[in-house]
Image (cartoon, rainbow, N blue to C red):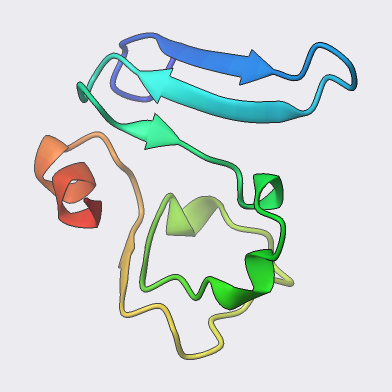
Length: 82
């Protein structure tokens, strides 16, 4: 269940159980991709984040994050990421 109260559908690799992708019912066509599924994830530099107030204390903004949303329950915030 996502924070919107609507279902999330997470998919996993049948061989190693790694999460591969997910879908949320709250936004049609929105696909969740864990950064670890990319061969070279170092080339991706995030500009926006959601759930920023739930981050680990040791994670810091290296200057790339321009917008941070504490909660993603408002549709406009999620749409801003697309």
